[in-house]
Image (tube, rainbow, N blue to C red):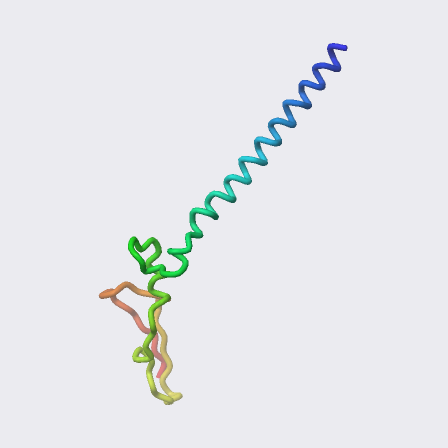
Length: 96
């Protein structure tokens, strides 16, 4: 009989641990989702305080002035970096 009670106690403890684990995981998923999905941040990522400068910049209108308007097939080139910082140096690879 004592052995049966020990087994029941063990199973009950395992069930409590399982419920606590599921509750912890659910909280870890739900709380950040609710906190990070505020309507104000979603509608205007440039509103102070700017929490994500990239998202803010991506909402701004672009300009085609950076493009080269030449159809000369004898010249081809690209930068060595995917992006750069303002005022930074950019290296080019050019094939003529």
